[in-house]
Amino acid sequence: MRTVAAIVVLVLASAAAIGGCVTPSIPIPPPSPEQMQFELDVTTGSGTFEYPANDNYAEAVVYVFNRSQGSGVITTARADGSVGPTDPFPAAQDDEVAITFETEVQTVSTCVVLTVNGPRAECR
Image (cartoon, rainbow, N blue to C red):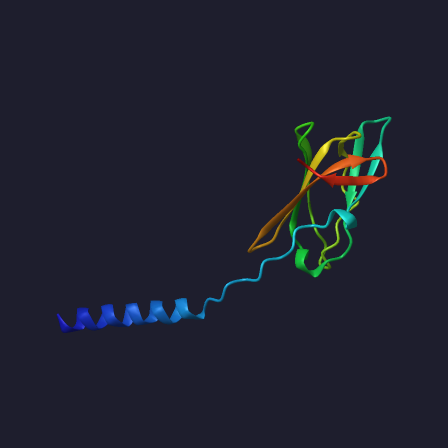
């Protein structure tokens, strides 16, 4: 019985020690609309997305989802965190597009309204 009690104490002590080593991660910022670049082709009704290098997004899975049309693309950020240009996705003037970066530990997203001059504002 003493052996079982000793094992339980060791397991609990180990769990407490391991839990004490886990530090909370620092949240990464959501993608900045000012740094987003969209190329809209009004004749084909499609667009592409680009984002400059950002270490926070290195090798993240990137989702570009057009909420207005219910379609988008998925790609992977490069080692420096840059993206694109992506494959074309359905896009038109005034569509709402959500850009999501998913890293191993966090997921951040920003939604913007598209214009031929770039993202105009965040979605409603």
